[in-house]
Image 1 (tube, protein in one colour):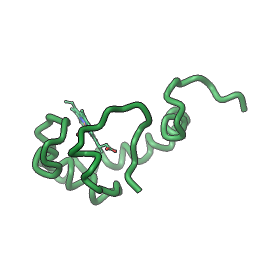
Image 2 (cartoon, protein in one colour):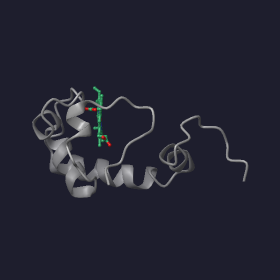
Image 3 (cartoon, protein in one colour):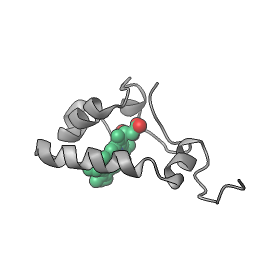
Length: 84
Ligand code: HEM
C-alpha cells in the first residue's frame, strides 16, 4: 500500500504513481524526484550523492519511530498528546 498523510493534497502524478515506499524506492525517488514521478509537485532537484541519500534515509528511519510520527500516520495530524 502507498503511504500518505491524511489531508495532504497529493498531485495526481503521486496518487497514481503506485509507488510502495521502502528504503529502495525512497532512495531512487530522492536521487531525481522530478524524473521518477513525472509531474510530481515535489519541485526539488534531488540528492545526487548516494552516501547523502543513505544518511538521510537512516535519519528518517529513526525519526519515524518518534511519537509525533506515529500519530501523524495514524490519522491524527493535530499533534495533540495521546490520552493514554
Ligand atoms: C530531501 C528531503 C525530502 C524527502 C526525504 C522527501 C520525501 C518525499 C516523499 C517520500 C514524497 C512522497 C510522499 C507520498 O506520496 O507518500 C514527497 C512528496 C512531496 N514532497 Fe518531498 N521530500 C524531500 C524534500 C522536499 C522539498 C525540499 C520539497 C519542497 C521544495 C518537497 C515537497 C514535496 C511535495 C510538494 C510533495 C508532494 C508531491 C506530489 O504530490 O506530487 N519535498 N516527498
